[in-house]
Length: 323
Image (cartoon, rainbow, N blue to C red):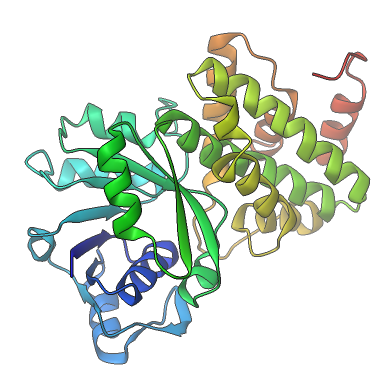
């Protein structure tokens, strides 16, 4: 039995902790909020984020990071915009076990990937990334899920793949850290766009076109940034894009839909695509990549365009070859 630490007791962190604990490991799930942790310890459920799923026997909640000190691997499931602050508050520079990054998003302002933020904080532990098409509720309830795990060290990657895969969660190995992270981050922006399409009642044909052209956009930029085409066509790229652009379980999709229908969205949940949109446009401008869909999404989110104006802008673009 291995000891696995999970930092972040939101829905996704709890779900990963649950499925790994059911796989026979001793899991410690760390939460920032001591009241929430006490509730999980007493009730055996994460009432705030995942009330439908009972925590398995092999998982225990903790508010003390020292409880993770002897972990064989640590999953870092901190929202993308909060990762730098967490690492500045909690020094992990002396960590030696592998750290697996599980949040999706580009850092607002810098456009950095999660692995770049970790490197920027002088963390020298081996790094891997888990991403792909998986909703927390489904993962936690034991429904079959396939995700990507990326690690530059192929031997370590094989070991982590074997360690963390379970009967219900299958991990596919790649060495493409950039591709797995970019697929998971960029798709959130297009999920917001697809939500807007549905909320504005523009039709399923429009959603299919937007999803397809959005994939072309994100692929162009991601490959310039070092991602492999086969990664973008896989689970953490097109697979995750398809899931989040077509399901109301997606927070980014639901945000876009509510924005188009009511002009507001207020669940108190993290919607990573909001911060990622402008960071994505900044990276595209920096590298000279045209990303018209991402640009109008960013403008709509910043109230620079209405939904109607965004549609008019896209439909008025010059005709071109499909590529």
